[in-house]
Amino acid sequence: MTDFINIYLEQYKNNSAKNTQETALPNNNYTSNQTVSGKKTGMSAHANSAKNRLYFSQKSYPDIREMYAKINNDLDQEGRVLLNQLYKNGKLLSRDSNDGTSTLENLYTIMTEPRVPVFDKKNIAEQTLKTLHDPYLITQKVGKIPSNRMASIIEAENKRLQLKIQQARTSKNFNPYDISDNYPIKHSDLFNINGSTCAAASIEFNLAHRRPAEFVRYVEGLTSVNKSVKTRLKYSDLSPDMMESLAVLTRQNSDFRNIGWDTVEVTVKPDKNAYLRADIQEDSRVKNTRSMVDVLIQSAFMQLGSRKTYNSLTDKRSGEVGEGEGLNQFEIAFVESIVDSQSKKIPIVYMELDNDLTKVLNYTYDFEQTKKQFLKSLDQGHNIITGFLIDVDKNGNVIVPQGHEILLTGYKYDNKGKLWFKYNDTDDHDYFAPSWMEADSFMPKVHHANIPQNALEQQPVHIPIGYLYLNDYRTLQNMKKA
Image: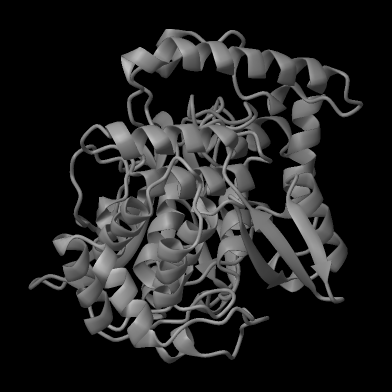
């Protein structure tokens, strides 16, 4: 579970006076490209067009039939069925990826080029096909380390952690929050871990659900000998101010390089222990825990959002957010802006809380306006990562200041005209299917969401409540270090 409101609650309690400053609005983005309101459509025109693509891969591939035959011949019967279904529904030939490569081409690369030595190509491809066939299989539940490997893993990790602490303390910019774990790591730290990658898992779901070619491109890159994926975007996809975009990339400790005057290439990669976890999941996966693909992709997104402080072994990140668990809304928006930069989304906080965190003082929009924003976003084909308070009564009293992230993926009206939202929860234990909730009961609990700008009919009147700006985030980080 992500203690996502931590960053806002600290802001309200300790820095409310500074929050009135006006700052530039960042275009924090992520996109998806099919309608989701229950209407069945093929891949949209945007999904396969080159209109907004910044570059094309120069790599050459064999004929489509040759690639299909090669992959098909190397799969088992279940894999062949899934590959054929992917072809029939149009996703196999989709080119909705950052570099224009297709789902088929990336699958072919997985099957024909070297992978990380501990992985089997067939296993990678088949797990990828299963996830594309049913993204609701994605989970944040952490797997178990075999008992015969536990002692050696802990010993190696403590040596690595001790060295990391020693090196960090010699740095001029040492920040104790950058160390995600307490030394020494004990056996108990690796048992019964409550997975905290709900936002990262939701972004993974978005790719598998809406952009199959990009999803497989990530799998290909993260399982390759390079252990990374490179993606390009405009500086303006992060912020209208280029210098602010550079500043946030630097503050997030991102690996990036300039491509021309207005484009940046960001390298996304998991933490080192993700490959240890993925290897265990490939060979000794406990039922209903993360697949090897889940491990790698969720780690990559956690690393990107947490300034490279995530540790897949303990499922912890830097401690300034949520006591070392999950991503806050700024970080989610930042990751979405890198991973899927086409749609213009901005982070909105929908409620203001009192200093004691016990009462909702104000809502940025009335509930009908919020519904319209969600419906418009879904009609445009954009899933919505939504953070909500778990326990708020009808009078706005916060019983427990605790929250969670889910992904809205569609909606429907019942025979009484009531609106219901379809959603996916990657932390719903052994339930791997979409769920539904009544909109009227959900609206008072919504704390934040990232919404396309063109879905907002009006901007919030109370700016500090409505938007989390990059400068606000910097102020909070500096406050944490003080």
